[in-house]
Length: 251
Image (cartoon, rainbow, N blue to C red; front, side, top):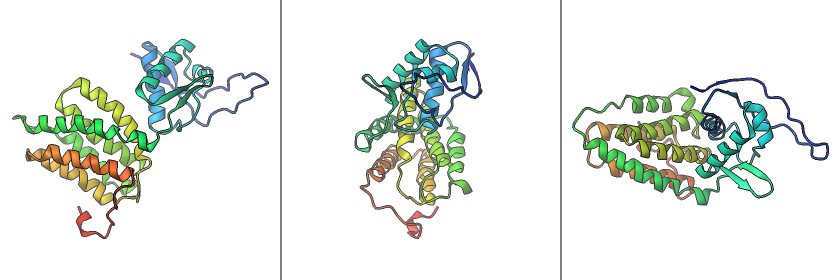
């Protein structure tokens, strides 16, 4: 099983006629087997959590030095990230972290809706008891003191996406769970642009979904769809956000 150890990266040698400044971000060195997948995951996680910002160049030589692996492994990992949509390749310039263009990225919610509505329908049709403890834990994170900000914090965004990913995982399709993971990564980058939105409403929106699942409400799939469409409208600037004083926003 692959393991990683954190070491400070050394500055790679550059040609005198093309000096470049070292990046502000660092990655843990790679140690172990299954090199391509491990390197892909390390770079992917750094992109998704914002350590490597949109638009930054991913120079192969620097990544080789940081990760302690081969150029071929880094190149293949970047190719997979290009396929996933998190990295773009520019002819004669190399690989760069994708800079999401809002108008062209909101269709991720269309894909998520198809998967999550299916998951909700699957769950409410089951006869056995549902273990919703992971959803409850994610919801609790949305209600912490740190989450009580005008805009969703990184912790709130992470909890939000854990909630939705767990919803899909509970439905039992490994294929759709893997697909949803990719869409969740793109969503996380979009949610950093989320407009001001009352934290109480953010949490209560998700509580409504948990409550509906618990009582096997036949309207649960539609509630999930409405929830995702609201997020897309907020991000697209096509919705007037409720205020904290609005009585409908209380828990």
